[in-house]
Structure formats: structure tokens, C-alpha cells
Image (cartoon, rainbow, N blue to C red; front, side, top):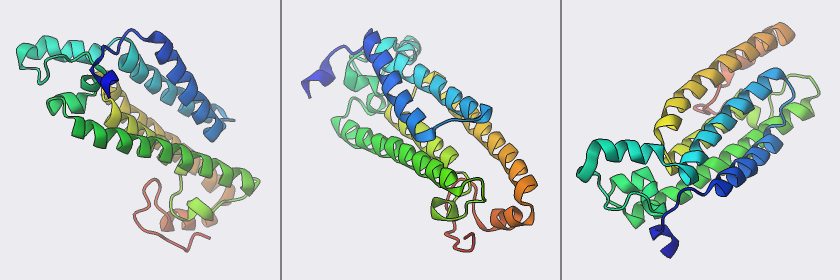
Length: 213
């Protein structure tokens, strides 16, 4: 892990590459078709731009924190790849913390992509009918849940001031979009959707209902 001790910023090629890679993966999984879909993807893309710009480009959060804390900042060299992980820096540059949080964050990120893809596949297979099977037996909005999982994963991996501000804004945005979506579903499916909504949670499968088939 010698690369962890090296300066890891000003790598704008890596910024662009990561935005493109995750952007393409997310686009492929989400497959936006409506204006609402494009707003959802656009907001998440803005989050990724802010994230990767600090992860590999210009470490605004680190400059801000070191200017405030000065010699009290918990690591000697905050600009290595290892210490760029804010949670690692706050733990004094712990390799153990890095070894735990980095794989954990990837679990959240790629789980989110999978959930988004499964949700889109279910809707597409429904051919305009109300879908209450598969993942929709457990949550009503798996695609929004997938985006939330990815956001949580990125915050575990590389929190920054900007992404910490953006995250709750995105959560509010997705909640509002889900409510608008449900109004249209009620108009289309009436009592059938109302009953489904009573039985199945919106984003988190707190109860595993099998009545929404």
C-alpha cells in the first residue's frame, strides 16, 4: 500500500475518468426516460462531480479543516491518499479504519447500482401495469433507494463539506419526486395502488410484506 503515502491531488484525468465511469454505470442501471428521471440522474451526477473533484482534484475540505485546526489536525501530512479519507484522518491515519471503510463503502455503492437496475427491470417488464412483485414487494421506490445507498457509500468513503451539504438536499429531492410519482400512480391505479401503498414501505424494507403481489 505504498501508494497510500503519496500526494494524491491535481489528478484531473482521474476526476474525469471516475465521473465518466460511475456516470455511465448509473445511466445504464437507471435508464432515464422522463424529465423526472433526468432530474434525478442530473442531481446525482452533480454530487459525483463535487465528490471526485475533491477526491482527486482539489481537496477543498482538507484545506478548510487544516486552516481552522492548524497543528491540531489529527495527521501530520493530510494530502496523501490515505489521509485524504476524512474518517481515516480523524482516526489519526489508521490503516485499519481504511481497510474497513473502503470495502464497506463499495458494498453500499455497488448494492445501490444493483437495486437501481433491478427496479428499472421490474418497471420495464410491467409494460405499464402496476408492479408489486419482485423487489416491489418490499419497497415502493427501489430506484430512489438505490441512489440513497450510493450516496451513503460515497459519504462513508470520502465525505466532503460540499457532499455533506448536498446529501440531505438530494434526499429531500428524491422524497418529493417519489410523492409526485405516487400521485400519478393513484390517478392511474386508484384503490389498487392505495392498498399497495398501505402494505409496502416507500424506501426501506422495514416490514417484508407479501400482500402486495
